[in-house]
Structure formats: structure tokens, C-alpha cells
Amino acid sequence: MKKYRYSFPKSAFFIYVLIVVAAVTAIVFAALRLAGVGSFVTAFPALDVASICVFVIFIALIGWNLFGAYYAFSEDVFIVVQLFSKKRVERDAIRKLVVDEASGFAALYYVAAEAQGALCFVTINLKSRDLARFSEDLRAFKSDVVIETNPMEKDGE
Image (cartoon, rainbow, N blue to C red; front, top):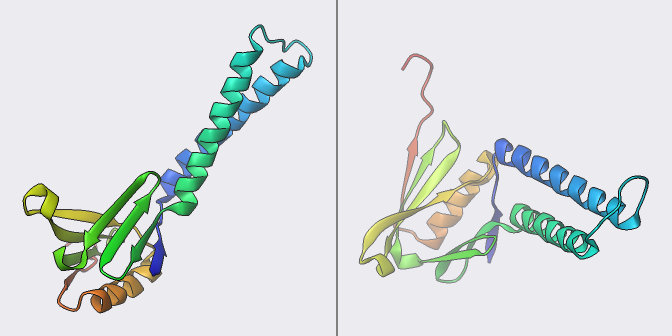
């Protein structure tokens, strides 16, 4: 199975870093209250233990999302995995891949049987160097897929 790692935008990384810093700060503050260091004293130790557990799980979920999200070509199915979501698109349902060079994103269009034949899409977030290989692997996966590229526009156009 050929896998491609999901590429998050820099703004998402920045937001994730802010969330992790806030969670680590909360964990340290709760641990200091549990230990009774200085003027940090807890009236409800169970609440501090619970908050530490929740923040550790929260940090683990962010890490799982950052490092576990991927796209994959299986035998007959294209798979998109991100956190608790796993989307499977049958090979025969795939119609077209549209690549936008200006934004670096792509959209894979398919016909969804569960939505009464509606045309749906999956956003493909890959690094630009991986997008060309992804297109080639998609062509090998389904030979009659239409691959359309929207060229980057020059300034003033």
C-alpha cells in the first residue's frame, strides 16, 4: 500500500503549538498544586489528576493527528485517514483530480454511492514535491482518471 503523509499548513502547526504550550502549562500548574510547592495548594486533588489526564490525552490526540494522517492507495480503494475519520473511495468511483498550483492543494472528485450518486470531493493536502508523485500513482491506480492542473497565475492577470 502506497502512503502519502498529510501536509498541514503552517498556520495549523502554529495553532497546534499554541495548544500544546497551553496544555503543558496547565499540566505543570496542576502538578505543582498536587505537590504543594510554594503557595500552590489544591483543595480538590482529584480534579487536578483528572485535568492532567485530560491534557495528556489531548496532546496525544494532536500528535496522532499530526503524524498519523495520510492518504493511501490500496488494492481497490483510495483511503484517507485523519484522526478518527477513515474515508474509503472505491477505484471505480474516482473521476477527476484537480490540482491548483497557486495554492498547492488538490481535489479528488468521486461519485458517492451512499449519497445517491452525488459528485463529492476529497481535498488532497500534500507537499508540492509529493503532489506530482501522487498524480502518477493515481494514474497507475486508475488509468482513465482525468488529471487537470490549474496553472499559477502571474501578477496582474
